[in-house]
Image (tube, rainbow over all chains, first blue to last red; front, side):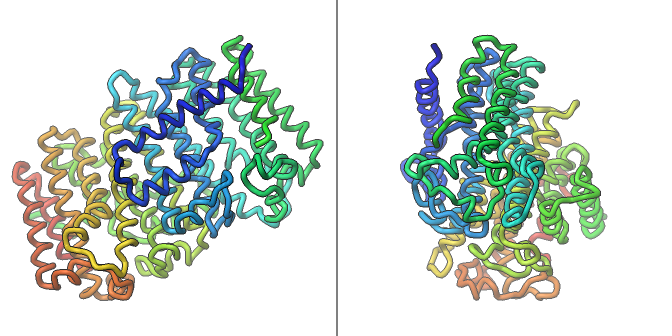
Length: 297
Length: 297
């Protein structure tokens, strides 16, 4: 029997160990910049994107080691986006993962720069990995390319722009889906695809896992919005109800809580369909898809 | 006779044309995000980093076309850094290149995100170029790697941290050199080296041009500090004396205006020495080294 709890814990540990090793060259005297970067990076996230990347690689027969640098790069990109989203000029949040946000723990300039540096380091890692002997340069370039596209002006950054523009405005469920696809879906899809490519998947396998990723990306956001209403602040590490306070359109606010839950489950099932071609090899990603929708934090 | 004025103008035109083409896929309906990115990118910079990159490629026998995507990526990285440096939480500047800074023309959130997206797009371009048929994947990875390192936590971003930390403090000329090497030197050096690598230079040639880049990087910053005192606001596009107003330590403030000028010239001469091995092929970069020190904007 596949045990997701053990799987998540083990993967989180190996990802965290790999993330720690990134800063070996800055020890024993980290700069204030590196301290701010690590403060946010090590604040205890779920490591969902790295785990999806590794899970996809293993699903197509690759190994964790094959893709660990990409998994780390994805977490760096994710952490940078959280730091910048939390800034006073954006969502102006004081707490993240139960701790003061980067600009509260340090200052605004440091937070902006820590985000910039995390983003840059992500591509430094990807480029360095592509150059490493024994690695397939073209595959690493492909992974870097799709991560950059998913993160940039036609992906995550654009999603954050749309999110800010939507505050206090009436939007349709269709527009909200688009916003979520940009803001969270694209990078989650890229995490899975990068893992599949670097793990040596065929193009059919990469496509199937890309579809899986797109669906759980949307399911993830829907689940997030539901948790923002129903979650417990002590497990979330942040206050609930903040979406309402920000007058943010969410799945539940547009179509109601019950239909939002049904939609999250439907997206999860669409994701699961894509895993059929992998047989039992797809079990970890299947369990992850369920976790994305059923988690309580 | 080599005519720098014609050279700069021609190169600026080809770089500007290549930069414009980057957004072809966003026409005819650019998002507000892309408009903000282009607002800052097309505000009329000198295109020094792209021109150094192209100049280095041509010095080692490569062509402009070989390196144009890297040249564009470098300008995107430079523009992102200007947008973020100008933010209220950092230097809080209202004018840049004679026009309102990005956060004044748009708003703070848009400026932060436009910077983020420009940085991300730089790596998107580099990765896409490495994948292009006929291009040497490993060389593009090497270029991306050194640009990322020069831009990140042990390069430009760290330089900006040091710059902010130094405001109003007494620092030595040695510390200021270090700050400048991080903040401006590293990325200028990377511009030249990336051009030399992608242009097909030998490792001896790449090293020589790297040294050239390091010296003109420092000379450039020294010249900038001198212009901040002696320059004309109408040619600079920004008020003079802002370093003093910010209580910024500069070359002239630490060692006096005349010694600062002598130092800029000395750095330029050290840069010129590195070009000897290239014979007349080194003329454009030699003229650029002189321009860096003698320019009036």
